[in-house]
Length: 124
Image 1 (cartoon, rainbow, N blue to C red):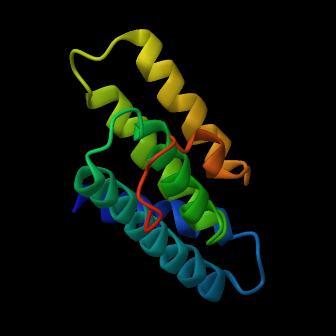
Image 2 (tube, rainbow, N blue to C red):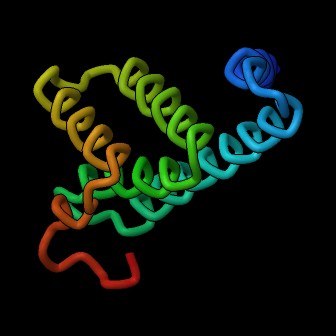
């Protein structure tokens, strides 16, 4: 519930400068929801693949797919990625830094296949 409230408030603040702030807010919310779905799909695929050294690829892919949705998707990807990294206990700082690098790589529109490990099933 809190996340929905934050998303709604952010979308209104983000779009209030526009003449069409209501439609812009609705578009932002739609992109954020779709971006969250992209992030979930990447996470689900990572768990399903269970392939050694593939987590950076899935981080980059989820962020890439979400950011392609637009500003709302990029925002959702950043919030989810940052939240996930802050909640990972027992993870080394080096691994977290590498994950964040992959997240930024994908969000910036760069090809996530840069992180794709050899031998990963082509369906991913």
